[in-house]
Length: 333
Image 1: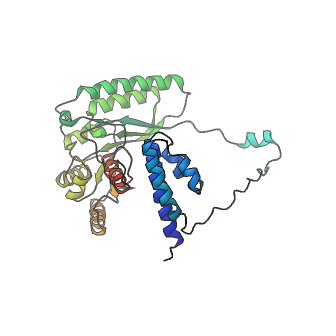
Image 2 (image 1 turned 60 degrees about the vertical axis):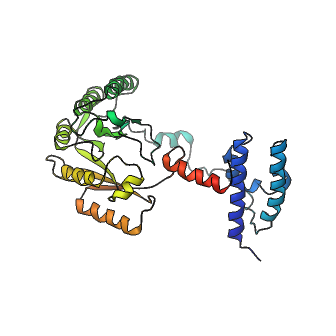
Image 3 (image 1 turned 45 degrees about the horizontal axis):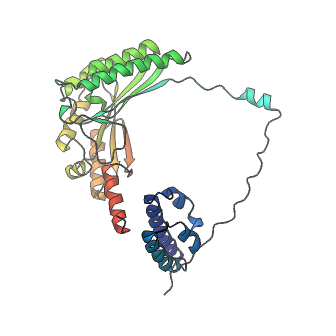
């Protein structure tokens, strides 16, 4: 029975991945070595030489010798030969004249402030965060984890040190508080960071000051206080409008908190600019679910929508689930 070229390529890819994981586990080669150079695996002898000696190596060698001839009988298209890169075309009369025509780089006019605190780590998250757990501040901010204040104190020192080694530039036009979940940080500490940036770098006449907020981490009073200290844009991390999907991806909030947060943001006086975040391709997310999330987003009427396609990263909860299934499929223990 014949086999198509695409089927042959798929079979070879599975074998290469199997070899990469086996050899990586034995400390012989990094997995990217085999995967990044797929056409190096074109000879049985070359592969078997990589197998370590000993009883386990003998078993691997026997397995490879029996399996690889079958794999390499599939259709296989060799890559075209690598052509040398042509020399660069000279497009200027003289180097000094060309160098003088290039404008100097603009001085930085934006600042990103990382506030790494979250209630818990979501299943897809590989960001540098600190999960506060039961010590997370309430939406009203009555309780405050001391680690937040300690971090902000170090952050203020970082602002001062950065200004000391930087050239004079234009005032900051945009400031973005990302995380993490910056809405867990008390407004007075957000104000302290803004004051430090204003004092060290200066702010433009109408700067855009954005902050990421998660449902369930703020109430109307807290949002008004943030607006009062200078925040004029909110990025609301909704991600989905289905309870099952929120639970499946490990979000700390539910659908009721999503609807409450949308109502607080849309009803906040003095806040006209806000964004909503959604994630597509979540596990068990159907086309109907995605359409429902889009309809709910349109009904909320945010001024901006950010859609992120789910990416599975190693070290995350989703990554552990995917790679454990892959290892089981390849019989790797």
